[in-house]
Amino acid sequence: MTAYLGIDTSCYTTSLAIANQEGEILRQLKIPLEVAQGKKGLQQSQAVFLHIKNFSRMFREYRLHDYGKLGGICVSERPRPQCGSYMPVFTVGTMLGDAFSSLSSAPVTYATHQEGHLSAALIGNPMPEKFLAAHVSGGTTEILSVQKSEASFLIDKIGGTKDIAAGQLIDRLGQKLAFPFPSGKSIEQAAANGEDLKLKVSVSGTEINLSGLEAQLFRIFDKSRAADLCSSVLLGIARTLELALESAISATGIRDVLLFGGVICNGLIRSYLSDRLERVRFAKIEFSSDNAAGLAVLAAQRR
Image (cartoon, rainbow, N blue to C red):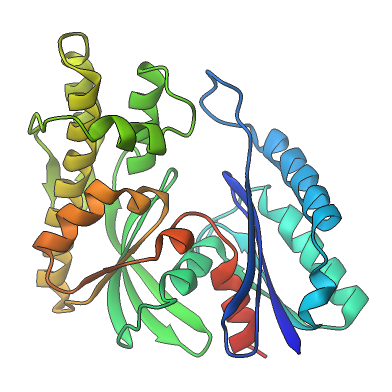
């Protein structure tokens, strides 16, 4: 059997995945980058060290040779397919991909973290050739126009946040509530018993501002229940995405929408948007947050 390898080294997760020739995921390994309690995140140098440490652990614990001869490798080399997009963390993955290629003679190709997300989101979600997408995570909140092109994508950013990302807003509230970082799971659990305080959202066409939501949350922080704050931030983000995506649909005439990213793992946001947008699809939970599965699929498609 021939195996295809995907490698992703984001600011949040060390991930590696293996697909077969049909693009079916045979193994997905993910280790979150550990952030000390009370810290807001990691410096790039710290993240690079943790990626190296995590890969060392993966290769000790798992025998990748058992999946067959390596036929191709795809690595994320930068965050997004935009000029100037660069982060040092991705050099760990590219170095590892080059090493695998040199040792096995399997060809290595390069993609971006966002293209890997898109490819993973398409697993189990057949989409037309052209569609809209929303990448909503700790570092990115973008509205995209996407056209599929042989084992790749033509991506045009048509909107998104003009200040902070949705995941940043969630983590800032989580920090104020003394939740672990990243705070998405803790916020979702707390929101289960909360009420929506119906905070105002700021959307102009496909451009959005989330710092206003943050300001409102912190103004009422001391006189509100934690559950209500958590419910309100998630529903505020959901309403913001709804309005921006409706504008994108109106402007482009494209009605099919695919959502992915760590924030899109949230059940409350998924439920709200699925009730209000007619042709919306969501990446499977296991493929929504940072992962290498989509890169393994691209490696198989590019063979």
